[in-house]
Image 1 (cartoon, rainbow, N blue to C red):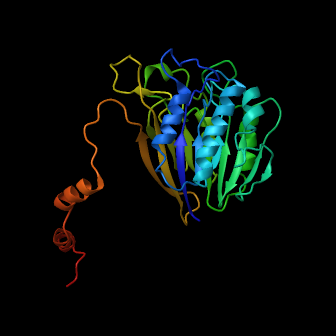
Image 2 (cartoon, rainbow, N blue to C red):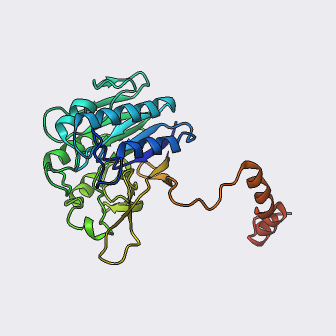
Image 3 (tube, rainbow, N blue to C red):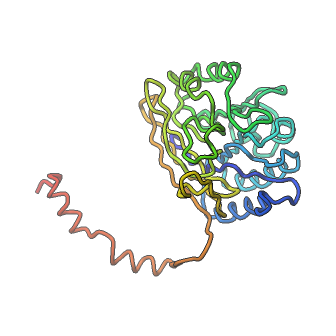
Length: 325
């Protein structure tokens, strides 16, 4: 296989009790609703949660995440990978989720799982990092959290570890998951709490096979790239499950609205070792008033009226010089 189909979620902010996020949002109900909304998503290879899995840092919140996400992924044949965020607590995260690369059966041991994915990671009380090998792709999580703080930072030790993991190319390339995006924010509340040393990360990635970076933290969709001096690596930020930050708020304002988001991403390995095709479909759960909901018959009828016709395609080919009678 040279393509991965990924469901990218972020910022679930689960609470282990009935506490509402910002006094308004039932985060567990939100995650359940998002997964229910995505019930028809079909086969997946990888489910990524790019940080802030928990809001209160409790073991109970991570138990909920593990149960809901692994159950959803197992039915679709997907591997689950979770990264640390600034709201996460390392001790409880490690207790329940290990290095964030649990096996399909929920066990946290390193080694090779029943699905054939090879997993490994670090131990101890420091940053939580991990690696999963999946069908020739390498999925790496790094921990950009700073305990007790909101901004992100990658220590020299963690960067050294990452460089060591990337020293040898994977067959189909690597995906890096980091909560704090290595690109600048666009909303005022995030200035000052972004990743503080993206240049150090770019230096490590310069000669690597990393083809895609998945992040969260900003609570809205964003597609950008990090320049390593040699090439641009795509950075995809997922909107939060907990709520969405409205980038159209007036200047200087930070506005959050109800609703959740995520991404379906298809990543193709290419013959060129350092490049890839990345297709991103942003998702948003339904909120507010529904404008229309067309059934299959209505869709077919309208499509038959508005879709381009074969004779029109032929004219276009002739105009472009592609048609040789």
